[in-house]
Amino acid sequence: MMKKLSLLLLAVLLACGFSACSSTSDIIAGDLKVALSRIERAGDGTIQMTWRVDNPNVVSYLVSKGTHKILLNGTLVGNIVQDTPLGVPSHAQLERTTTFVPVNPAAVAVIDQAVAQGSAAYHVDSTMVLLIIDDKFEKIHVTYSGTVPVVAK
Image 1 (cartoon, rainbow, N blue to C red):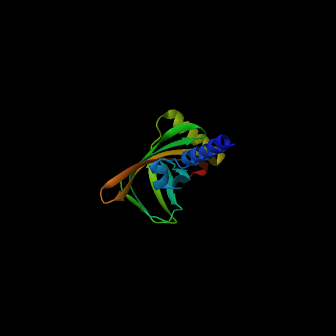
Image 2 (image 1 turned 90 degrees about the vertical axis):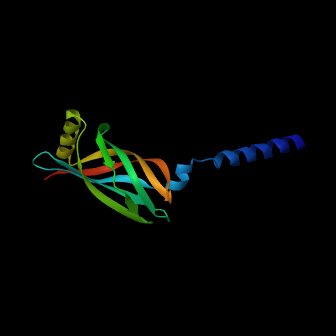
């Protein structure tokens, strides 16, 4: 009886210990996400991509820099490189519009198809560097998927 109780106690302790394991970036970033708001293709072929950082957490973040890999309808179309710091207040969204350069002609075709459809399923795979305290930086990785309106001007 004592042996069974000891094994049960050990199993409970191990389960609690493993469930408490998480990475530092998960703790620091919480539910931070990068989402697409709108894609707009101008008549001259230039593409403007509007994206936002959503921060539902109680702490503010300073995103020092970031790279956001963009997939539309399952195809890699390019990257957004954010090289200027972004201060994201707690419980807020910060939106930016960037001129977007597709990675290749196939990516242009995917964007053209999305314009014809009026929207596209997207996936953003982001690597960001957050300034934590003074000069301490933490690299985090977040992903997010959704649907974005895609229009022609």
